[in-house]
Image (tube, rainbow, N blue to C red; front, side):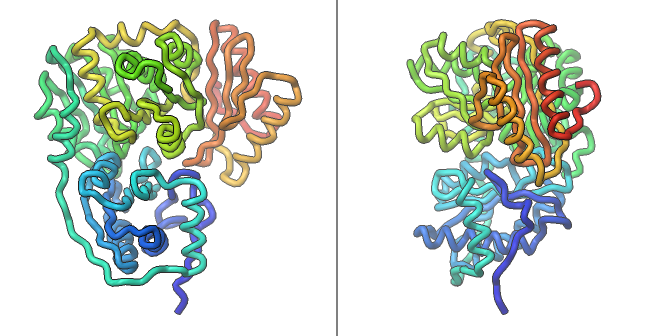
Amino acid sequence: MSLAYQFHPTVLREYDIRGVIGKTLGPDDARAIGRAFGSMVVRSGGKRIAVGYDGRLSSPGLEAALVEGLTSTGLHVVRIGLGPTPMLYFATRHLPADAGIMITGSHNPPDYNGFKMMLGKAPVFGETILEIGKVAAAGDFVTGEGSAETVDIRDVYVDRLVQDYDGTTPLKIVWDAGNGATGDILRRLVKKLPGEHVTLYDDIDGTFPNHHPDPTVPENLEDIIERLHAEKAAIGIAFDGDGDRIGAIDEKGRIVWGDQLIAIYAADVLKTHPGATIIADVKASQTLFDEIARLGGHPLMWKTGHSLLKAKMAETGSPLAGEMSGHIFFADKYYGFDDALYCAVRLIGLVSRTGPLSALRDRLPPVLNTPEVRFQVDEERKFASVREIQERVRASGAQVNDIDGVRVTTPDGWWLLRASNTQDVLVARAEAYSAEGLERLKASIREQLKLSGIAAPEGF
């Protein structure tokens, strides 16, 4: 019987593998991923791979099938169990391992799941993910007698997180784990940090009964803001479903968005890395890029996507990168991957040393902007529609940045439309210097969507 395997065409994404359980993704896919990626690891000279999984109901079953596939290639699999994605990244360095796979649906709905992979210290994305599909389709698998063991690295990981805490004044912090995969690690972490800590929804529950674990959506932060006010806390910190994206709230109850956090971190990092390249994605505010330059750094706008930013960091030697969605990467003192728990430790230290988070947030000049707005578009249509919009806008003579989607600069500010690599949506954002300007930018987005036959959500 042939071992050749075909994945659903929507599953292999730009920077991970992701699908809907029971529809486009299941244990057979996990087993095939194990065989295909395991074969690629073995062919690259690897012998040992770390595997972890998040708190989704489907994750343990996918993990068992994945391990079966990996061991069939002769690899030794180190199973680190349930925890956040950055703990898996840490494990590949600490063990060490030649590769790593995290089973996670990140911030997607509960019926989604997926796989984030590392080969060596680098993220697996783009052509390498497509190669997994080609190896599986050809049945070109390595075979061998592999093995597996379970290793508990939770305490070692927490010790590494607190190693770079540099605060001077204990603070009161409210945390929201969103019933995601950070819950257990968060409980261990707050025991080792100074100050007073209030934790919300730190029981891991893949049905996400309280709110969805996505800190970019303001409604998901309502509970933590309410509790922050009640507790008179200095900071609120929220995580996404797998702990690689951070959300932050200042002591006034205001959301500190991802690009504002990058600016806050950049001011600190550039003190020890003067002139360094600081990278942010195309969704970030122009005020961030201007602030990096003002601080003496070299601002670099790049494509959205955790794997793409990590690769660009390695290429440029950047000590700090991040994106609007809350993926923030420290190569300053840390490993260069997106770890929201580590980002939290650095933020608490900064506020403890330098004063209230609101003051750090308000250093940036005020602008008016939309949050990330998502427009549902069929998977097969979303990339084509962006290409159409790029061509129309460029033909009109507008100032266009097409590094990732289409970002158009006008006298009012800028607007962006790009196709998500993880969901069947287009993502829009606009930023202006006035309320009237913002309305004009939003009207431009609506017009372009309408010309491509896409309905904007009511109220946008």
